[in-house]
Length: 216
Ligand code: ACK
Image 1 (cartoon, rainbow, N blue to C red):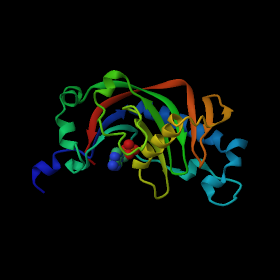
Image 2 (cartoon, helix red, strand yellow; image 1 turned 30 degrees about the vertical axis):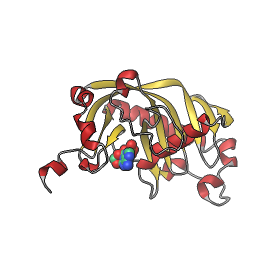
Image 3 (cartoon, rainbow, N blue to C red; image 1 turned 60 degrees about the vertical axis):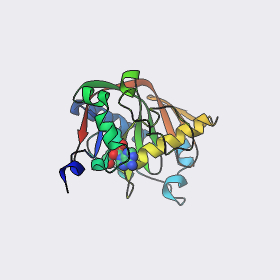
Image 4 (cartoon, protein in one colour; image 1 turned 180 degrees about the vertical axis):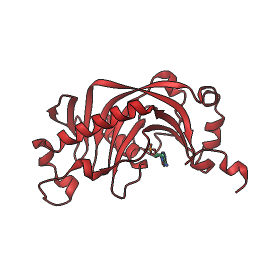
């Protein structure tokens, strides 16, 4: 392929430093381990198993998806719409390679994905593409989709994690409070139906990360 078609990365994003990757993975594993023992979760187990099986091992159910990161722009090597414009954005150029601290404010689980919600600062939002929330029918504020994929069910692609998060946020915006399910050590857990669970973290996790890109 001509060079101009391959000089853009697969995606831009914030890549968590390896020390904090471990911490986030451990927190997520603890959460999954506890979640699948809760009566509230067992009551809705059919969302995950499709039939009335009485157990699911969530730690096995979700497969890890590589280095933890928060995607800003999926470029698909230049084939994605707006990829070139994003790469040429002055903020993207100026901040490329810089260190940031991401704030992880919630964990969420669906039958397809497990992820962490990232709450972006105004400075971080300068790196956020305008079209990221486009796939949602709801009109959610920029940055709503920001997340870290922690795992995917068999056969599910990581792109699904952002879709799942937007779905939960659209329900909230629609006035659906969800069903308060449990006060956990990590925070309060809410059920949004159809296997969608959100844990608002009592203490956000601060995650040092480098803004960069991934070529694969
Ligand atoms: O977990 P993620 O945010 O979801 O990180 C991966 C990364 O790009 C490499 O695949 C994300 N991704 C894939 N396709 C898309 C897409 N169409 N829109 C937004 N993000 C995407 C995926």
